[in-house]
Length: 249
Length: 252
Ligand SMILES: Nc1ncnc2c1ncn2[C@@H]1O[C@H](COP(=O)(O)OP(=O)(O)O)[C@@H](O)[C@H]1O
Ligand SMILES: [Mg+2]
Image 1 (cartoon, helix red, strand yellow):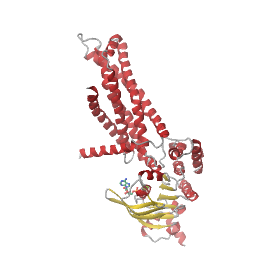
Image 2: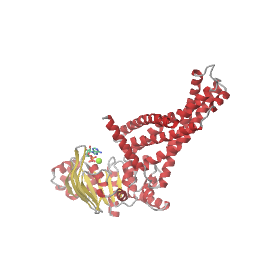
Image 3: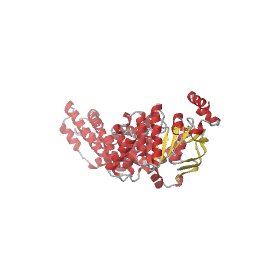
Image 4: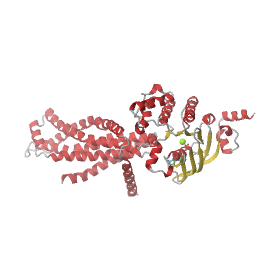
C-alpha cells in the first residue's frame, strides 16, 4: 500500500512538472516574477547562510583541533580537514538541508495559501497555466542563486575557522593557510555547486508540489509545509549519496 | 448564452449533481439558489471548467466546452470573468496590479492603455481611491468590488459569481448586487450568480434556478417565486420570518 501510494505521488509530481516545464505565456511577467523570487528565496537567505556557515566553520576547526591533532600529525591537518568538510558536504548538502527548512516551508505555505483562498482557481479561470506561472520562476530563481550561496557559505566557513584561530589562539593563521591550500582540488568546488543546483531543484519543485496540492484550510497548509520539509530533507540526503558516488569517482 | 444539458457529477460515490438542464441567456442575471451544500458551487465550477462533469454537455454560444482542445479552452477562458466567494485577489499585488494582471497577461495593449483600462474598471466599481492599497487593507465589500473590476477587465462575455454577498452586510450586498446587475445589462454579459441571499433574489433575479440535493427543483423569475406552490422551495424561501410576513402582506 505504501509503495502504491509513493508511486502515485511520484506520478502526480511528474504530471505537475510536465505542466511547469512549458514555455511561459509572457516572458516579461516570467522575468518579473523571477526577480521577485531571486530576492525572496535567494537574497533573503544570504544572512542565514553566512551566519550558520561561519559558526560551523569555527566548530569544525575546534573539533579537528581537539580530536584529530596530535604530536605526530602535521599542524596543517586542521585547516585541511576543515576545508574538505566545507567543500565536500557542508556548503552543498547541509546548507541545502537548512534551506529546505527556510525556503521549502516558505514556498509550500505561499502556494498552499493561494490554493485554499482560491487564487490558483482565479489564475486558471483567466486562462493562466498556474503551475508554470507560480512554480517555474521559483525553480529558476533558486537554481540561479544557489551557486552564489554555496560560494558565500564556503567563504563564511573559512572565515569562521580563521576567526576561532585568531581569537582563541588554538592555532596560528599560518598553519591554517597551509592546511587550507594543501592539495587543493578545484573539482571539489564544482562538485559542491553541481550538487547544490540539483538540490535547489529538489527543494523548489517538491515544496511547490506539496503546496499546489493542498486541500482544505489553514491547518492543511501547515501540515503540508511540514511534510514538504521532511520530504525535501530525505530526498536531499538520498540524492546526495548517489550524486557523491557519481561525481567523486 | 450558456446551455447546460444533463450534467452529472459525483465525488467518491456521492452524487452531487443529478441531471441538471438549464439555459442561461445573455443580458440577464441568472441566479442559482439553494441551501448550503446543495451543489451550487460544484455546478458553477463544472460550468466554468474547474471540474469536469461525469456526463452531459456544456455549450457556450454553440461551442461545446468539454470537447475543446487545451489551447482553445485557454483562449475561451479569456472570455470568462469570475468572482470567487472570498474575492481571491492576489495578495502579493496591489489592487491596481490585480486589475491589470489579466491585461498584462493576455492583451496586446501598450502599458498606458492597460493602465487606462484598469483605472476605468476600478472607477466603474467606485474604487478610484484604493489603487495602491494591498488587498488585505480593504474591507470585504471593497475586496469584492476590486474582484469585480478584475473580472471585467478583459471585457468578458460570461461572468460567474460564487456567493458574491457572503460575509457582507445587507447594504453592502445591495451595492454588489446592483453592480453585477448593471454590468450585466450594460455589456450584455451572460451572468450566473450563486446565492442563498433572498435579498439578491428579489433584487436582481431575472431567471432563478433552485437546486435541492443536486437536482434542479424549480425554475422561474422573481415574480413567480413568491407564489410558487413547490413545497421544497417554499420551505427554503420562507424559513425567515420577514419573508413569511412579506408573503402574507402581498396576499392580502
Ligand atoms: N472537491 C470536492 N470533493 C468532494 N466533495 C465535494 C467537493 N466539492 C464539493 N463537494 C461536496 O459536494 C456537495 C455540494 O457542495 P457545494 O457545491 O460546495 O455546496 P454549495 O451549494 O453550498 O455551494 C457537498 O456535499 C460537498 O461535500
Ligand atoms: Mg458554495
